Length: 190
Image 1 (cartoon, rainbow, N blue to C red):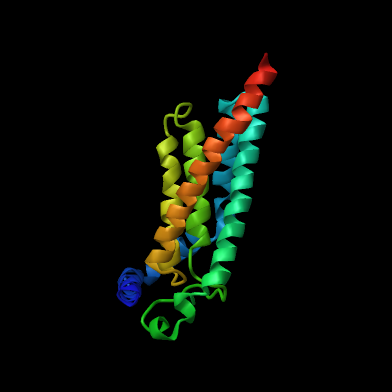
Image 2 (cartoon, helix red, strand yellow):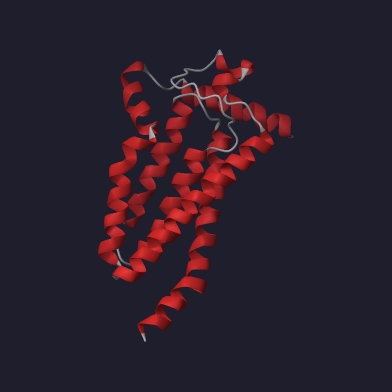
């Protein structure tokens, strides 16, 4: 069963990756580079500051930062425990895909997918009642995660599992905030 799943994962990667073409390469390389998303991060920060009272905004931002630190560390631990080669380094796959990036770290699960999904989900949970366009936050993880397939450095399962772990982590952080931090803030407003 696991072997069949891995084979399907490789076949889907090869198919999706080969949908790419040279005219779109620059776009997807730009999308996959995290520093190019800094304006989006600044926008997220501004929305939180505008939509929340000052003190609560600080705690919301800290919760998002703690989630980002947690998810990057957790992803790194899992990658080193599983040690799945990235497609660009896997002999059975690399000759069949277009490789636009060449990282040497491990593949499972995608840090781009887990971090962007977790942050977008947490921001959505915090802002869904305060910001009409909160669902648009999910454009970022969709583009960011797919870019990893396009550039040849992640399998679809890396992306899917990363997204699931990211969403679940965000939910845990959100409810922890609601149970621990929000009551503290309410008490200090009295």
